[in-house]
Image 1 (cartoon, rainbow, N blue to C red):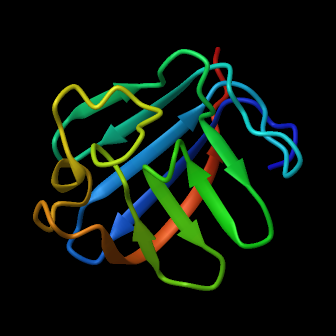
Image 2 (cartoon, rainbow, N blue to C red):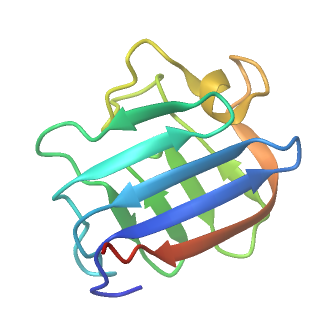
Length: 124
């Protein structure tokens, strides 16, 4: 994943919700990606653009983080945590909240996942 632009992280929760984070600029474990990004709640067909001067993706040995923990995955744990619409958002939530992303109710910020995958988009 290091120095690869146009990546998408796709997450599936145990309740069948799909969420995704996209980063236009390359990301490395030493520097976050900040050129452009998008957060997507696929079940609700909502997309949330990255705010100006904010990071889209960062990661290290322990976490893969989209935005400011709008999506946070921890190494070797099968769950996703979200601060979407609650804390200092890096994505424009347009009035939406964590329930729009995780689908488990407005108070639920962490849910179990089935899987997550990282893809490289190849634009033609």
